Image (cartoon, rainbow, N blue to C red; front, top):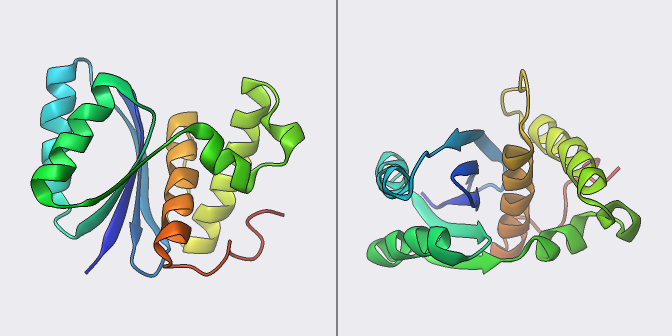
Length: 155
């Protein structure tokens, strides 16, 4: 079964996993202390989720190359996007002004996606996981798994 993994890149990585029905299944923040640990972690994550058919990365550089190489080895569809791509789709222009405001808005929208999906509610939600949730929502819309943003997510 097809699924999508969204990644907010960094040594502290936000991850969000979506099923083919376009609903969020799980999300988390994970700290990889080094690039070597990240390399092992990316490999292990994809091994433990063999149904992943699509990978969406936000960001670039050497960390993105680790994920892209792993996607290539596995024949996954890969999108590498900038924050502006998903923010432009989900955030009002005024909510994109300033790092703190965009992170707060991302947190609110991510919690709505969690609720709509029926995924477990967070005890706390790190900003990298919240952003990965929205990166993943962008991905399922691009893949055509959802026709539109679910009702109630954008307000």
